[in-house]
Image (tube, rainbow, N blue to C red):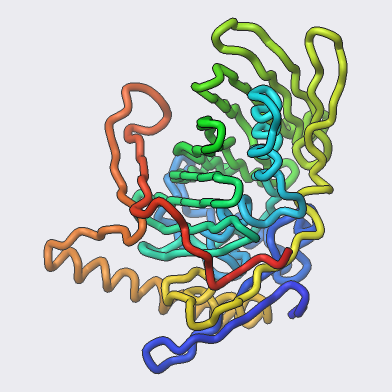
Length: 398
């Protein structure tokens, strides 16, 4: 394995050593997947799905490790916040006026999208799994607060810039024969507390295409709103046509408008994995607001700073032995380690059910309510139990 892409720490857990394995973040350079992808993945995937009916919900579908990347979905969500090569959040907090801050928040939102590799996916987090990482003054904590449906909560705070993030996400993948389409539901909030502004946004959907050209794309509409300023952005993420034409590949189009005046201020155009610009409607001036190469390339792998501070529920610890198996392509060892984790989780579920006990998250309060309209029957929300996220035992080097 590449030592530049893997960092480890060992903790003693109930008399047994557990290895925390942290791998390089998803970035512009990760698409090749040369470190751990198995050969002939498309053939293997089609064989795996041959008995799955189109329209099936895949939330309970467990992948063999040969189809996994060596990290949990919790880590992928977290990386989109703490793994950057350019501190865009500080720029958001320090914007000189509401329109400047809003435009910077739009650029930051685009930066949370990462190119994904075809044929492999992160692990489905188990209930109670956590991921706790710091980058500079930004402390980020995630917890899997529900397993069926799979709901992930994120809380991040930066006391220096007085920033807070609260995310609630639940992904619903469905198989449609030639593709897997995943709705990424839930609400993301970014709070710039010095300015009294809260930005609320959603996520595009993730689509895995098998035919005619295998690929993974972020598609759909994203809305960003700030109630305090009345500013709003509408973004549309597009991809290849069915015939594989790449004219709209990873393109993004949209606008920034004043919802109070119903007036468009900027038009947005570009590609989220390259460059995004805004055009001032009044004077036609074009400005680059985002360069992916400057933000999501050449990123550093997190490291374990405080081994004793690692929790047994930490993703990098929990999946450590599976990660090792995948990185070394010891598929049988990876499968055995993953099976052990999943069997233990099923046993815990059976024990709680027999005792009539309900799972209570450790770091968040989870609630749901009936939706009147929308893709999902239920709307899930989370509230952090603590106002600040403490510094983490895992850090991202600056």
